[in-house]
Length: 157
Image 1 (cartoon, rainbow, N blue to C red):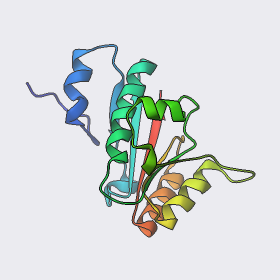
Image 2: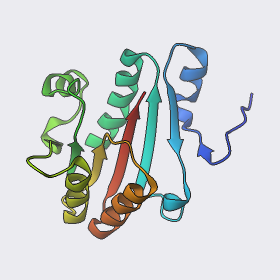
Image 3: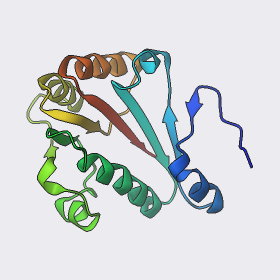
Image 4: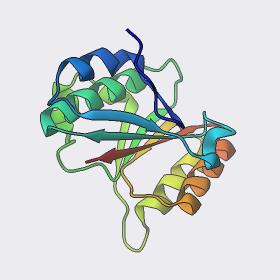
């Protein structure tokens, strides 16, 4: 059975069947827009909506995969929700030796910290939890290209 896709949105087949089979499961979408369709490897945005337990389970799967990358650089989580603690990372089976958890300090915003981490290139992926406009998406994509990294923004509904 084939399901139609929304225009401008791509399906993630790994989760597709599980989501359709369970109506209380979260909605998982990868948001596409003109700012990053030219270079999809620089910026991605993932929206998770639904039961918080399901969202955390799906998020754990994505982060676990990223934490096991063959790239020797860090997986950096910036401005993560409080529920993504060290204990949660451990319980979710993530490779904690390859993960940095960073929070902005002082006057620095989460967006500024994410852009700085991307530009430095010491992380293969920088994950943020931000409500972004087009300008901020372009800033993250540009910083990711400068550092040879990927920017992944997570929206939790």
